[in-house]
Amino acid sequence: MSKQKKFILEENEIPTQWYNILADMPNKPLPPLHPGTRQPLGWEDLAHIFPTECCKQELNTTDRFIDIPDEVLEKYKYYRSTPLVRAYALEKALGTPAHIYFKNESTNPLGSHKINSALPQCYYAKQEGTTNVTTETGAGQWGAALSYAASVFGLEAAVYQVKISMQQKPYRSSIMRTFGATVEGSPSMSTRAGKDIITKNPQHMGSLGTAISEAVELATTTPNCKYTLGSVLNHVALHQTIIGLEAEKQMAKAGEYPDTVIACFGGGSNFGGIAFPFMRHNILDGKKTEFIAAEPESCPKLTRGKFEYDFGDEAGYTPLLPMYTLGHDFKPANIHAGGLRYHGAGMIVSQLIKDGLMHGVDIPQLETFEAGVLFARTEGIIPAPESSHAIAATIREALKCKETGEEKVILFNLSGHGLIDMTAYDQYINGDLQNYQVTDEDIAKNKIGV
Image 1: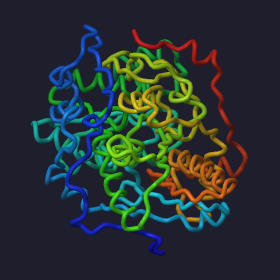
Image 2 (image 1 turned 180 degrees about the vertical axis):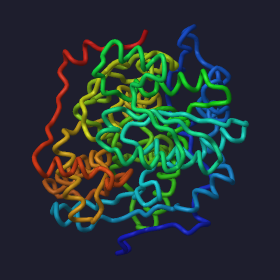
Image 3 (image 1 turned 60 degrees about the vertical axis):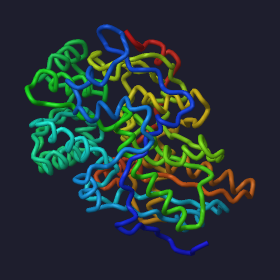
């Protein structure tokens, strides 16, 4: 095997298509339902909210590969490929025989994987004559990426950022505004959904469910405005498969193939992005790679959620999605991994869990920061709190290899850096952070579905 630490692709090796796992899944997800009629949705039913091409991609179950538009591919080449790195120093610190690799999505100018879907969503919106886009964001990685992509394609952007995350990470709001977006803390008084939530609970610090409600309301009540989404839905995971398709080629350059693939999990975008291209070889070729989604202990929809049709937002504006959910009015603890504070899992991932093709693990907050600090001290990169969930899960697996002597190959996705999350690291180092556990009673009281 090559003794290189970093593996990159030449420009002509960058994938020109996304991979659509829906075409290969042995059991397709149940269809999303119209929130009013409760009937299966067609792409036309979604087109008043999302860009039309995204709607078609959302429900495409036949095309295995979908071409990346030339204009999007051109923008990708400004920062892709991203490096695949062998984490030798982390391996040494753990004393593990495992070979640990990470795909470093933090190297692009926006600092996270989110730009991979923001660019095509804004491109498709521009192509159909849209002038405005809106979205929600938790920790702010998606809001920053969307704001930048909107500026690239000449669109006006409005972002609803979860209020607690806005307070925890004020510079992410500054980044969005620097790119020309308007930013509101959610819940806000600027929408009917926000007003209703504040009326019920004046101290509500927000969730991704509240912010989605506000953004969808704005999109459906503003002329020439479309809603964009940073995770959960099928077309978002589709765009993110550029990560795993690159990683396949890079792992081949390294002379290895992953036994285990790990990513953090909020709604599923970065997990699907790195996992789905490798998972197709389990489905089609009989490979035995294990896939692990690492979620917060305080928001455990994969490990403790219920598989039901549920809304993707708190107000009930979105389609009903068949997913593992804690309930659309679930109020997660104010952890610093704001991008993972979402009540439900995407339709694809939910079906894959039902079929036993992957599984979730929940990680306490303090364990994630311990892992993030170790990674920073060994590999020199301060990871986002979200990404530290993947690192913590990777460390667990590597230590199992230490116990058994098994020389597994572990690949994880470093979905973003934590340079705007230093307040959280300060609190961890000062001993001011704590774990949050969800009781069965907490989960049972939340509303699922209609």
